[in-house]
Amino acid sequence: MKLFNKVLIANRGEIAVRIIRACHELGIKTVVVYSDVDRNTLPVRLADEAICIGPAQSAQSYLNIPAIITAAEITDAEAIHPGYGFLAENAQFVEACTASAITFIGPSAENIRIGGDKAKARQVMTKKGVPVVPGSDAPVKSEAEALKVCKRIGFPVILKASAGGGGRGMRIVHEEKDLMPLYHTATKEAFAAFGNGDMYIERYISEMRHIEVQLLADNKGNTIHLGERECSIQRRHQKLIEEAPYVFADAKFRKRVGDMAIKAAKAMKYRNAGTVEFILDNDNEIYFMEINTRVQVEHTVTEMITEIDIVKEQIKLAAGEPLSIKQQDVKVNGHSIECRINAEDPEKFIPQPGTISLFITPGGPGVRVDTAAFTGWTVPAHYDSLIAKLVVHGHDREEAIARMRRALREFIVEGIKTTIPFFLKVLDDPDYNSGDFNTSFLEKKI
Ligand code: MV4
Image (cartoon, rainbow, N blue to C red; front, side):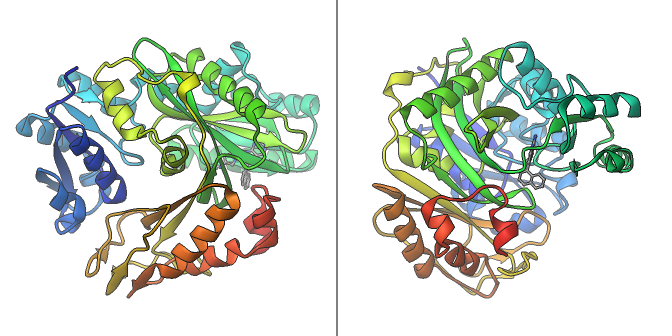
């Protein structure tokens, strides 16, 4: 079956490199777009063609829809891969691609709209019988309604912005007297941040694990899952360590959460690759939290344990190919862990842009490094501070942890500070090693 001749990559950094690699393995030519400060970068070198689309500020380059569509048109690219971040979850961008007869490698505009409207997604899931945390059926319209919902579900509750997600615009409310002040500040904050102040309410699960399921769906609606990832090690809603599988998952758990994810995807006619995020509480109850309508940073750990190339699958699915993998052929093998190496101070997590004077990546058995960094490259201050993903695979979690520890020790980055020392500390933590942690782990430890 004929895929695309040429794909344009509307992104930068490690994910641009990741997508170029998938295209080249599929025999597809690549075009990368870049901003002024990204001229001397690895994606620009690796792609067959590169086009400057504007100045460093994202709004004028990586978020500049007309510039990117024009770049695709003048290079005859038939499809655009958006990566993650930037335009990956912008429904208008999908429509702009469609209007120019360019295939968007990702879900439909409608999928993205539902995924971006958290209250709507919750409603769709409730209607189709996917479990959600007890809460409001829709955004609450008044103080009186907010109070009524809270009285029904009981405190503590969590207020969430419909347009938020990933933790932005959230407030935990422990008792009734705090509800109104927090409801008002959260509403105002959400309005300022997203131009939409809608808030919905859920019962607050004080101890939870973040479990998510990778999905693939073809254009006919055939949907499979690639198992779960455990992403509880996060700081200020930024994931720092992810692993697959969830160490306490057995085949029964995997089927339960996997089937829930497929049900969630089918409820909204989901297409291409996506991720359903769940709350796992201390009673092993699973609740739908959000759906992420993009390839995620941590897709790599799933690739390591399933040997399925998720980015290649995205491209084939976008070209209209049917799913080539059956659910029963998805096998989970061993254990994988990812550490997100950020150009940040390892104590205070303050970004550290600057020139890398020496960059030597680890290697050897079971080690994968996804990066666009190299010796002499300057990390710009304008973008995300992720400079490398260190991903390991082992026969079991214990071997994966040992492998991660030795790979972190091998990793040489000079000239800027990175989060490598932070990960070495986490990897020595007894609770991390036993698997006894939840999303509060880092708040308690650092
Ligand atoms: C929750 C929750 C507890 N109960 N929802 C949603 C987005 C994700 N990044 C964090 N989210 C949470 N949703 C219910 N019903 C706990 C979190 C959560 C969290 C909340 C506030 C402060 C820090 C947090 C860290 C991890 C998870």
